[in-house]
Image (cartoon, rainbow over the protein chains, first blue to last red):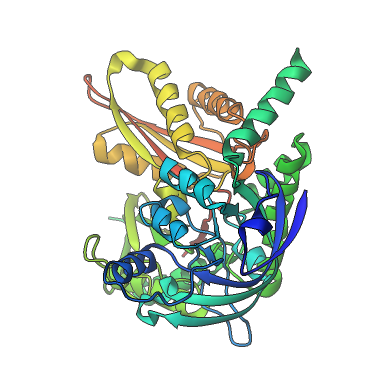
Length: 189
Length: 282
């Protein structure tokens, strides 16, 4: 199935999604990766507000290349999400609804996705030029000293994504290869 | 005595600058061809569609002068320098200047931290990770192979026991692929080093990634092992991006070296579908 979704996202928006579905996401998406997650965690420890409202928000794990003059953004494919696992369950419990990245997540993250009715979506890894096409506007809203790791507010239109972890415990990294191997076995048997 | 050829360091700077840009914006012909062939033969619909997106990405990168991938990598620079060549000037500084200029000029990402623990971006993607080999003659071959971290982080090395033999090597390679899963952006490319010392083995694995995918190991024994490992990795069913499918790996290159009677080191340098390299002869 293919779904058109718009941020901010509610539990109800995400409930029908299943691992393997495709999503065309529009609206506002925030970027944050390794260093920004560390700083957000420090702010939460100190009881201070984050650079953006987590409620119903989508975070894209990306460090784009610098934009050419006249372009919104450079190449902007996903980075490996697992490096953010340490920080993620807390953010999900505080209202984060959607993560965009690539690669497997820890069991703690999977549990927090289900507990909060959230989703983890795949952008195509290594397809930075292609992914940048759906990003229409980009501005740095926190920690410019982090360079490519600064927190950016992106406006995206129909960003093509695939559901990796769904709110019901589905995991495409398990079901996808398993379905392919089963079909192959059926063919041979 | 043979005549010594002179080469200015600035010629190396210019070449490195140009090659950093070329490598990051267009894929080597052999990797592109392997991706096209995989897309054409992939039987699983989602996998075929995903490989199509990777092809589309290459077109968009060329059209819009964008890097293929936002992780424009650490600048791994390999110099094969003839023994009868003399380079005027500071070699590391010349290579670094080429990286600095290329990454700035083409809007490439600066991804190097100056200290592994204190984590401060150097701001210009230097230093280059320079490997120099001395070779006969008076030539100078410059290869730039930008390396992204998503796949680099999934690389591994093991000091196997000689009794583990070729079966142990195969098992280690497949275990490395399984542990990596979708992290290194499959379809992957594997550079494998077998033998040497601990450090030499890792260098061999990196060196293996420089060999075009359509050039098997010249030793038939290792060429057969490359084919066997390629089939075994593709049989995992991980598929493009780990979504499932027949295309998990585009190529396997092995470099082997003599080793100690008590050693069997094996290193896997993991690379992705954006296995980048560009070279020039000066």
